[in-house]
Length: 400
Image (tube, rainbow, N blue to C red; front, top):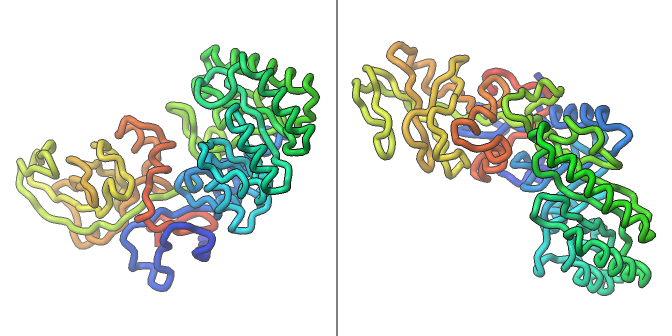
C-alpha cells in the first residue's frame, strides 16, 4: 500500500497527524487514485465528449482542490462549481482549467469571476449583471445559457428562451460576452425507465437549435449528470458533468458502483473510545429507544451529528476488526453506540478502528438507507471537524 498526504494547501480541512499515525481519533481517508480511475473510466465511456469534474460542496466533502487536481491529471478537461465563491478558491489554488459556476444571486461577485476566467451560467435575470460586470472588468464574460427542460429550478423557460437569446446576442455584439454553451439539468435520469428524460432531451435539442439559429457558435452543449452518463449515451453531447460518479458512488438504487467500474474515494473511520459490560435491559443514548436484550458489551464511537452523521441513521452498519455491528440508539452530537455482543476481546476492540463506510467496511449507501437519505447527502455532510487524509492507492484494512 502506498500512501501520501497532501500539503494543507491541497485540502481545506484539518489534516490527520502524519508524525504519529496511531494518534488519530476520526478521519475521512480520500483516495485520489480512485478519483483518477473514475475519471478515466468515464472518459473512455463518453469519448469524444469532454468530462467536467463537478467539485461543488468542496468536492462533495472530499476536498475540492485536491479532487480538482486529480481529475484534471486523469483527463477531465473542465471543472464545475455551484457558486462563484467556490470557483474562486479553485483559481486561487492555481488551477487554470475551464471552470463553470452556475448558481447566482445579486450578491455574486461576477466581476471577480470574469477577471478569473470563470465561465458563468445565465438563466435570465443574471444577464444584465454579467454584462455590467464584464464592462467593469474590461473583459468579455464567457456565458453558458441555461434552459429549463423540466426540472423546474433554474433555467429559462421555453417561453422566455428566444427573448434571452436576443438579449445575449446584443451583449455579444457589444463585445461584453461570448455565449459559449447551452446547458440544462435532468430530473429523473437516476430512474432510467421514466419517460421524462426523453421529453427533456427533446426540449434541450429544440433550445440548442434555436441558439444555433440565433448565430451562437457553441463550444459545449451539456445536460448529462452521472446517471445520464451511465445510462443515456444520447445525452452526452459535447460534454458531461461528472458529479457523484467522480467520487465512485452509484446514482442508481440497489446498484453497486463496481458494476460501472467506479471506485468509492472516501473511507470514514474512527477509533473505539470506550467498551463496557452492561446488563440486559440497559437503555442506550437519548430517548432510550434501544435496550439491550442480554448482558452485553457496548462500544462507544466518538463521532456524531456534529461530524456530519445523520442523527436518524439507526441500525447503520459499522465494521470493527472485520465484523459488522449496528448503530444502537440515537446518534448524538459527538458519539454513538454499537452493541458488541456478550463474547468479545475487550483489549482488542478498545482503540480499534471502526470503519463506518468505505474501503474494508460498509458502503455509503448502507448509511444512506439507514437514514432514509441518499449517498450524495452522506458524503457531502461530513463536517470540517473530521480531518481529511489524502492518499494514493488502496487503503489497508486497519487504516494504519
